[in-house]
Image (cartoon, rainbow over all chains, first blue to last red; front, top):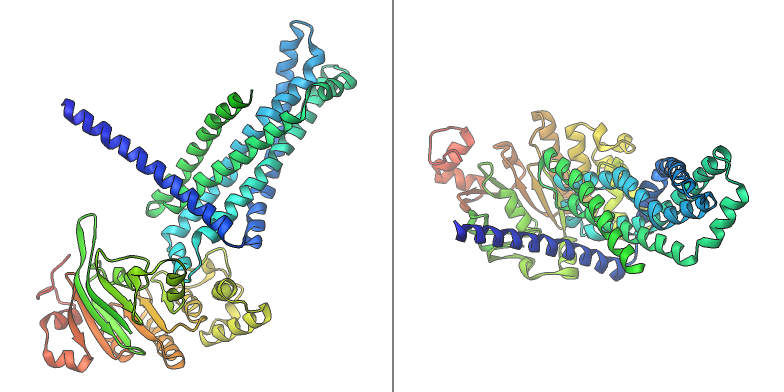
Length: 257
Length: 248
């Protein structure tokens, strides 16, 4: 009984190590093709449109409402001790440092990451990836690298849009609805928000772009056979990406503070 | 010339190739027949270097495929065209874009030149008016012809056909075989056709090999094999349940 438990633990540990190694090798191969061969700009542009441009509406919509509801909640909390004047900086700092990068990354994962995993997964099960290899077209260079580059470009931009529209949403609620003065809202904001806060938001978005494209491409690339396999790969890619975003967010925040 | 020498391959303990030997001469059209699920497609993937044998060697034009990596493997693959059983067309690209794909990716040809060449190939396959369609809009036969056009566009010296007529009605199936024969006459490639479409395929090949239990059990011209009166071959031709070949 005891021995079989130890064996089970050992098998589990080996399985985890094998999986991590496989993820690592996948990313290393993608980097090898990213820096070792000319970039396919047309493919990158197509994927920027797919991941970035087509996610803009949903990111703007969620950004506006996140800013609005956040302003409501913060105003409620600040009014308890008469600190309403800090509404602007609180909204801005939270959006730029935290909510913008994280929530926009989660939204893009749901919209584009899932589609990415299923698209590559279907290419795998219908032998389209084999066809690429047979035509001597490297699938990492053709499929993975453009998605990674497009995600790393798109995520920071969409994160910035999210924060911008969120601040504007907070302005609508705080200034127009709750009566905080416009000068206080924006004036205090420029006093408190520093360049390092913006850099922090961009760094987070960049790393989230890498994580999401890495996980989603990997899951699609190594999908199991059949429709069920593609469905599983899609679900896992969204779940793993979302969990990793939140875990990585904690670590990167705690390191930088 | 393609030589498979004593190739062994197993998947999760299931031995698929068990010391397979085969020799295909340059310019020869070769049919590989045998029961389903016994490794014929696996053999094709070994020849093109997508899979590697556990032991044994595969030589293509005197190069050991198993020892090639990177640029060498890429250069070797450029000799090949491959017709997939289900076509493996890129579903986000049109017929034209699918056929133009290898030219755009692997040559420095200018777009007008690519356009001319693709339309010539589509004309050969009777697909010129369908150039704008997506794979989802095509019939099974049209998908096969598009895939064939894509495989032929680089004018390969070796063509591998994985069940080119499976799933097609007899008339369209015959038309695909005719296209293959026409392409062979035009380009003179070495061709391997994995198929169950017997005896029809025998009209377009010079040699036939039959695979069973991970080995080649019959190899020769149609006349030679018929003269030998091999019971396994007779059973496969007649589709009889009784005989030396068993259900898998």
